[in-house]
Image (tube, rainbow, N blue to C red; front, side):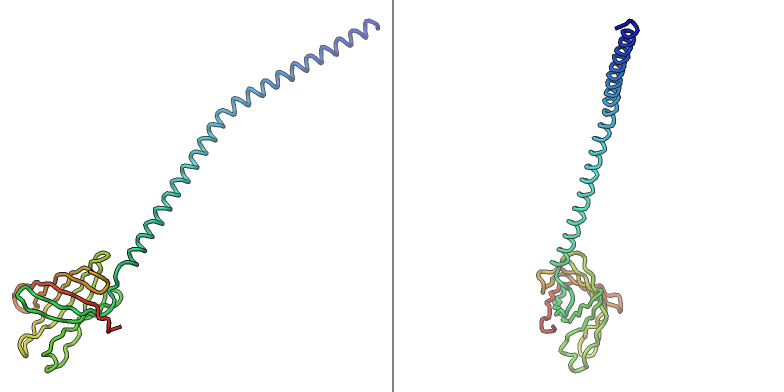
Length: 202
């Protein structure tokens, strides 16, 4: 082997060694860059994942609360006694006097009062008067309207009745009542009442 050939072979070996060293250096550089990049992005991904899971938890909690509230409202409406129908009402005022009337409760808070008095058989049946009712809560109810009570054989006592009571069951309401006269300066009359559902009216 001559000197030229040996020189060429030495040059090739040196070139290969340089390439190997360059390859190792590139790999180390790439590894360092990868490690340095993975840190922030990994932390960002972790934070993003936590944020998404937290948001999902909050949204799920809100949805569950809405479902719970809707269920409570539906249950309350289902359990509330119905006001619709005819009610027989007995009134006892503070002076001991008593009165009776029918209350026909209709949809949308409407209704009618019809005074019951044996003397009306002689002078003709009384005319129904418009009334209205509202539910204060699940068990409380208020209904009011104008009426005319008979006084003696020919007299009429016109005024406004206001009932405020509570359901004691599906077919019973107890409470207090006020009668405000429409004529004169007489004070209002206060008393109690008992209303029972007229099942025969169905």
